Length: 155
Image (tube, rainbow, N blue to C red; front, side, top):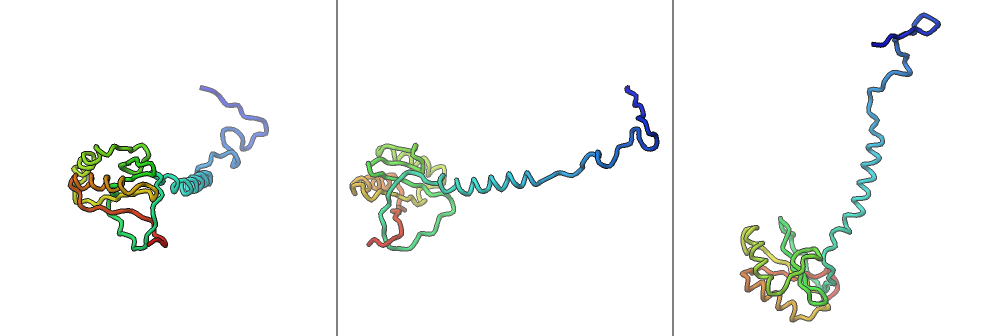
């Protein structure tokens, strides 16, 4: 191993470390807290943008808001162009013929057809498109259908 040579001056020198060069045994948490606060602000700003879902311009109607279910409800959306979406993502497009079978498969996983289904229809879509979707849902054995509207001044 190596040898240490005392530097001149004698006295205290040698292998003993002075107070100012002693290793720090404390953790500085200030940078950690700063990073966490920045992440918190980013997620608070980004979270509302992530829940957009399928863009549907809902009609307005007076009424009271329904009590929100314990688990996430099944949502069927009909857009202005008449496209049907099962779920909240724009990639969840489905044909009118396949909607009944797909809903039954989801209901089997979730515990039955007694679960409510929320139908979101754009206010500019022809009523017949929404009626056809509702008819297919009824044919699949679901009885609890709710039309989603915005609370507002409408009739």
